[in-house]
Image 1 (tube, rainbow, N blue to C red):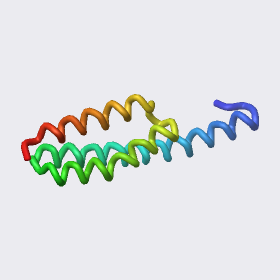
Image 2 (image 1 turned 120 degrees about the horizontal axis):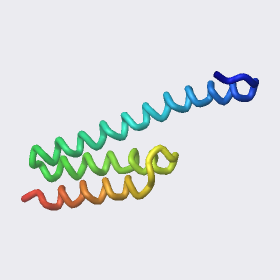
Image 3 (image 1 turned 180 degrees about the horizontal axis):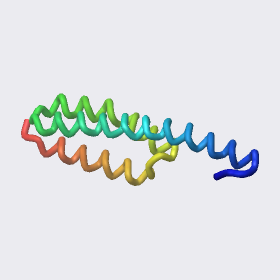
Length: 88
């Protein structure tokens, strides 16, 4: 356990940050799931709209540093490819 005053404060900050980051990760996953469900339904327009809504959320999680920017780029790229593959 933390002994110094600064270490105790750092421990409190870590708990707060962890909670915020968990929320952001959860939101990111929710949006990705919505896109995947739209792709699975076969509706190209709905899938494209879901990706357009998810993209800022994904980029924000990368900007804040929760996930790596290349990870987000890869996710967006793969989802886009899957949407383009849908027969319209």
